[in-house]
Length: 355
Length: 283
Image (cartoon, rainbow over all chains, first blue to last red; front, side, top):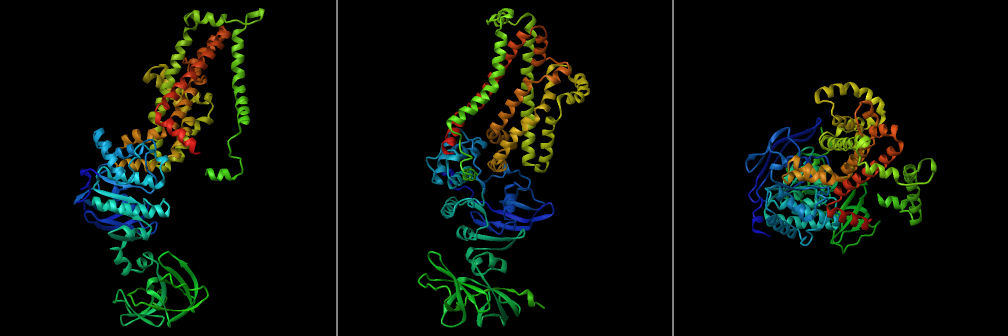
């Protein structure tokens, strides 16, 4: 890697403030606020239609805003066209220019910046080496696999040393193994370069695995933003609890700052919860086999490599998932008892019985 | 998609060598018979029967002077018109289509209808409408032959549109232009450096067919009293049918050569040929 590339987007702070974007009456973003610290890797996570891609495209300048400001290092960029915003972007769709070789693709942004031919070539080669594609300079897009194409696209986005790196679901067209491999690599490169990065994905594993902070989006706004550990352990809302990680949703009753579930008393994430009937979100790893406790019949059990996930149908018909050691191999139809580890849980007021 | 085709049980397979030869042979005959007949006609030796090259020699020895000179001028006119028409397609139609495709997708239907419309209007009807328009055009720009290119720009629309649109649909123009923009390219650069190279095939096909249409156009030129290749040939044929047929043959050869040259220009870049051969190898 050449020296010029090291500092890249190091000192860039991006701030969205009250950004609104409407598509013919539909609000894609409604007062979106988010700050990306210098060198931070932030993932926007949400279901489709939650506005995550819109937020990224607005930052790239590919969409205009209807209200609010976007600043980069304190300077408002709302009026700048995409070509002047100095962002590197990797798209969900394969976006290499098919008439240019991989190397020429990478050089494109440098050519636009009037970098002379020799420097262009050496920087393009360095960028290709960065994504571990040395020797692929002369290949064309159709001669590359999907993963390789996205690597070239990443090199192309990074070679100009942009202030911000934008990743718009760059891995979603790839198969599972390549996806995991490439996301680790993106994280490594991002850490090396220290470039401020916004990563849009609908895949919670992906977001939790690579991001410094994850912003969970819902209906054009951020539901919760925090470190992956935070989101997982202390989801601020049932939506987050349900979306981040697999959760069991079971009925319970809140009384005196604790929730009672199937005869067990569990602490609450948010102890200010009013007394009454609630839905409780239980992580499968917080459910365990026990000698006594709530009883049920094993309905499914799947091997997940390092652990096993088993579904137990309780007497009231609810299926409760538990994650446990692979040495335990419950048989389908087996009668078992389940207990809880006692980790704090998040709850949602049950709409049925709200006064 | 190709997988789906393959599943239909051999229907999508390439034809065998014999079938291919047969198809090509039949199509070749359809094209060859009138041309061979024309050649045969020009070689006839009057009432005595037999064949010779006397008429061809006479034409070439005269050096296209005298009575045949107008044909040469008319050929020049037609070539100029072809260039003008292609220029209209390249400078007006292509940018319009790209703009509609990217920025105003809702207008696409309307653009398509407008562009396809001329094919359903007979040239003679078109002329009735064009005559008064050309009265104005003549007042503004004079009655130069080149003004016909404006009318031809309309008549070639359906062909050029189809050729370019199919290419536009096959390429992810939106993502490519967005990628170009994030890399710092303005719209002009994107059009020239990113989109044109990838739409080259469609644009060339559109240009080919425009040239062919213009070189073969008779009705509009004749009714608007302009001289182009076809109207000149008709004039000659009234006096000397043999020479008219010779000239037609020469015009055919000329058009043929022209298309080959344009085709060469399009395929000149070596990497394209490489790409094509590799794609073929993969499929």
